[in-house]
Image (cartoon, rainbow, N blue to C red):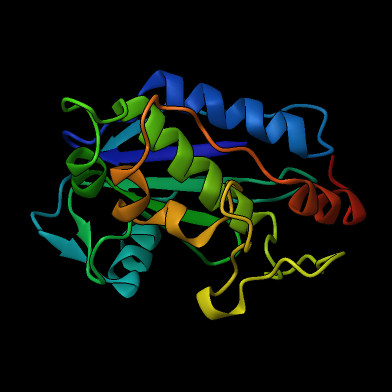
Length: 196
């Protein structure tokens, strides 16, 4: 199950949530993946957020947690930017991610830019990959593709888990709006850990 909360003016597109569900269904060995109806939470009025501030907001607003064999992922879309610059999303804790709508808006919807749905989808899928343990973030790599200089990311540029996917730099060069897929190495890692 995925709980989605968003601040006023930062509602995710239905297309991006559908893409997230399809990605999780394709890669997890779960009988079903449900995404709860997105719930609006009050805006905080901040221009930027630190990881600690995101955690505090989750503690204040999150309603669903993993229990009784049901895994719950949490996605919060905030109305500002990340405090560390051009980052579109972060994974924190073991089931939580945050998307920065202000930054998503800066790289989507304009002339020559991908759609909001495409950018949101890519960021949601990338952060979900981290929550699934990719790359060397809980799931042991089956081959040498961990980009150690850039944290828990893949060194294959075409992969969804490539480090630049989480930054605005990646979207400056994304024409046509195609969503990157996991490369064969990341898929092998998931399969070795019981995924698909």
